Amino acid sequence: MQKTKAKALMSLIALTAWFALALQLYILVDNTAISGLTTLEAVGRFFIFFTILSNILVAVCLTTILSAPGSRPARFFLKPTVITAVALYIFVVGLIYNILLRSLWHPEGSQKLVDELLHVAVPLSFTLYWLLYAPKKSLQWVHASRWLIFPAIYLVYAMLRGGLEGFYPYPFLDANTLPFGRIVMNCIGLMFVFVLFGLLFIAAGRKLSR
Image (cartoon, rainbow, N blue to C red):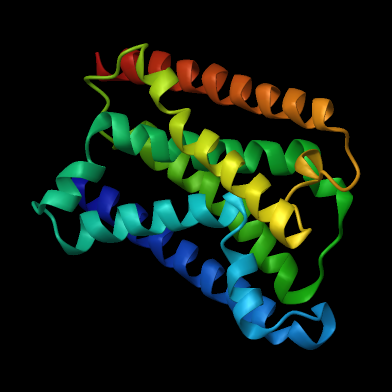
């Protein structure tokens, strides 16, 4: 019964994530006449957001586990350190958006739907899946520092692309309006958030695994 419930929740999350990602990509491409981007540039813009990359991680993780159980990729994603890292990344996506970014713009129609799915529905449901069903037994405190690798690489990637294209995905990284020192402090603050909640995930995982 528990496995059936877990699979049902995983399927729902994966379908939600894939649907939201596909709709967001469609919106970006469909709006090229307004944004002034080419179709290729719109597709490239899609992959500059941490929100998108984290939701892709969730979708690929769950789809792999569901479609190829027992395979090497599925065993990789089911490692407590890996699936907890995915949960941490998507949780921070929801946290940062709803605390810092939600008030900065007011999407409507299909864009509003996409925003709620990517920043609320998927983060909350995947965190719930992690709490209820994900393996957590081997989590160690040191893992919180290792989970910084992905967001650190992302920050470098986002800043390099921003420097080349003049577009920065988030206002706290916008070198067009912020001094370099402020951006550095923002990045340090973001890393602190990942460490703090990484430690909380580890603490929760160790307690739940007992």
